[in-house]
Length: 307
Image 1 (cartoon, rainbow, N blue to C red):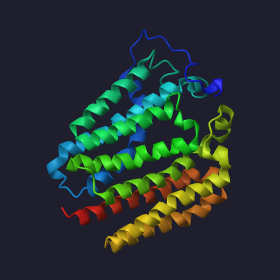
Image 2: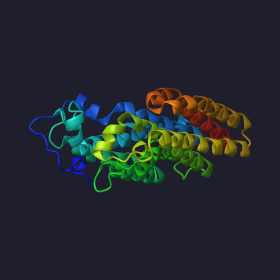
Image 3: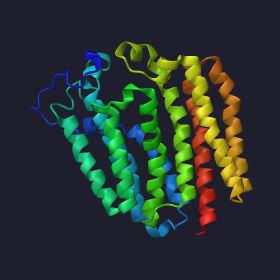
Image 4: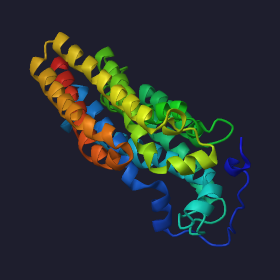
């Protein structure tokens, strides 16, 4: 592994001052919390349990998926990337000194403990999902694993942490049981599709990733091939979702998911013609359709489970 990506190579700034709360909040990156909280909401809906009677558990699960587990992953990522950020993004909280010393690492560790505590309070299955998500979060950024350095591994970890595990968590938090196998199937399928979304997010820094030895899929396969793979990986799981909903006697929900899939398909040629330019537009449109289909699928499960 190149010295440029050796997480131990960066100096640690002085710990003589305390960080401002705003700098710590920036380190936790609230903008990234939406995706796992949306997936968690899908899990809550799909559980088929009255939500009004379980509002406290829902609040705990939302805090777990967003500020805690996702926040932990963001703080850990910034800590282990501080050496690269000092060169490329010196204004970020750690390299700028606004989060001094080992505060970044300390925050990630404390948030890990809080995540496990909240997960345990919500039940054994939530704790298991939380622990698995935290292992992936640390492995994504921390040596010796650094899953983020390879697009196959890193995108798989992110897809699970942003879609599948929060969905599972939302359902388990309300029932205190292992979720229904059909809920688990949906969570897995939408995690696979999220892999493709993560590939599109790698287009913005292809040259920099090549220089740093970060083997994203656009670097490994080329931008055009990676785009084609992303489109296929996003679409195929949704085809399976449509078939699953139809088999379970939910033709209206299946038709709606098929409709949002067709909408994505109509946008994909635009993306394929100019992937690097059009990826942000596709993320704003096609991805919105994708996550809309997630919620439709969740309501289908809710009606099947009958509460």
